[in-house]
Length: 325
Image 1 (cartoon, rainbow, N blue to C red):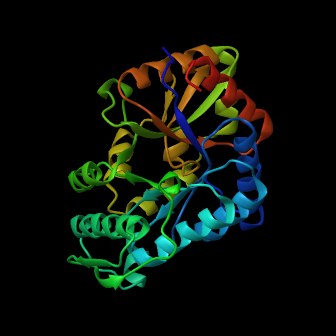
Image 2 (tube, rainbow, N blue to C red):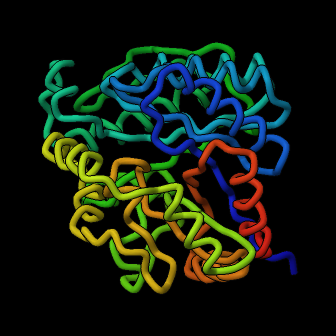
Image 3 (spheres, rainbow, N blue to C red):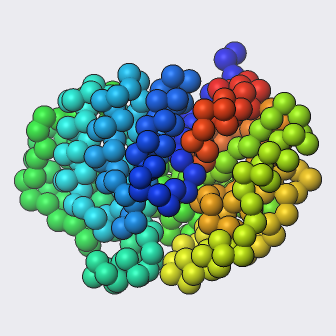
């Protein structure tokens, strides 16, 4: 019997330099294309330097098999526009894309955009967005849709998308509202909890990996790459005051920046250097953790990666040690 295979979507660690952003994305995207990753995660938000749909086109033109995971937030576009982008990329490249459906961005950004919906209502809107978009992509006939946030009357997308190129929808979030919408729309993506002992309860997770041949070598290298800094911690405090994200608050509640004996490390998140916690250890230790996660239902990983060829090779060795990549 063939063992289950983990789908892995790399994402670059937080980048605050617009001059390096595209280069780092392309470095990771091309590495991912050569090494069996599903595709690369592309973020969305007011502070993202390049619109993810434009970046997806750039990446697909430069790769042979990559299927980007594109973040989509209803605050920025109509479902018909998103469906049109999916159809266009399918026609241009003959490849599917994945869609990471999100509702969150900074509260100040929502205010700037004139969006005053509550956290729960944004997830209701997200569910309608996915429902209408799926109908537009799959229906051979004009679509009628009557929701709270979206209405369509004899709306049709041409040409109809082939079934094999239909996008897969992933939902990011840990709130009750996110869980409810995820049951209706597809795989839910979550952060690891503040403490690994709390267990996993989602098929998708977001974390980073820092690995070496030996455990101590990995821990020393990780501490050199991600350094504690009071200014960076203060930057995270400021962003926490400007978000209603449930998963960020869960992680922030962990607060410890210590590298645990089990290799679990929140410091990259707490110092605003990454959007997620990290697993640190030997290739075999990380591989064993991934295998254990998969036994608990994990199928999909959004993987924070340092955009450095050597570091990415270390990550590949840890993934390979799981026997599922």
